[in-house]
Length: 134
Image (cartoon, rainbow, N blue to C red; front, side, top):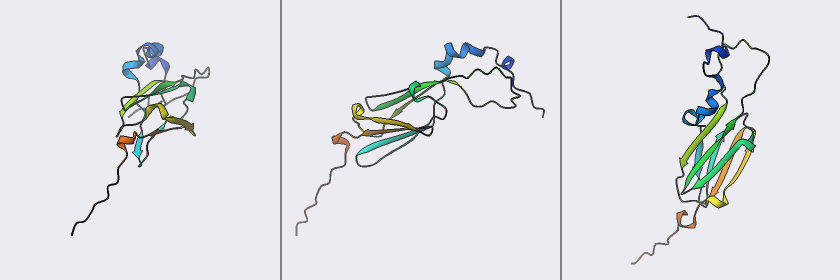
């Protein structure tokens, strides 16, 4: 098996991906969990400028989308593999319960996007005391 040096010439449509990104956008991996009061979402987005990230919650669907800027380099490198991509990303997720989307909070720390969304009151577990009749 021989290795082929990476070259921009191997990407015949180069910058066309800006116009065609939407259908080919990558979807970042996520972790979702919940406790009694909140739903938590974490998405690793290393190297992404948080100013280029948009988050929306509508009908208990969380949408994360944004752009990882392509860094143009003057110096040519001898790539054998180039897996770090640039361009747009998009992920839409059904949250596990009804949430208060307008009260969501998000922060970006060390390449991880962290989102906390409070649950709707009707979605929180209710404790019912059981009466024992003898």
